[in-house]
Length: 144
Image (tube, rainbow, N blue to C red; front, side, top):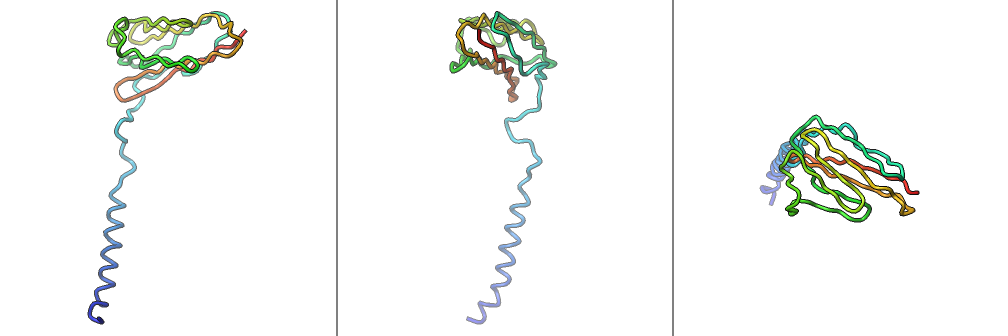
């Protein structure tokens, strides 16, 4: 028994050394998969519209992006399966009940909301994607 006790400090040291080596090999400085740097570079990320019909033009420095989806209050719309919208095109228009969103060219996004006579604020988010980078424009429209 005494013979086996002499190995205990060596085994403990080996386990401790292995654990430290394993933990130090994890590198937090590497970019995680799926998170690219901002390659859209929006000029505006938030806006407030008045209750009347209102619009805004958002410009981008990047030109390789598309509209990933649009959310208005509790409804979210995606356009990947929409034959009326070609997301690979440099220009397209999306029109729904209370808004129009247009990609006018590679660097211009136009957003228009109709008059808000609902009596409650209208919240809209336009989700943009460029490869593995995601960004958005948030708009709050006041109510009459």
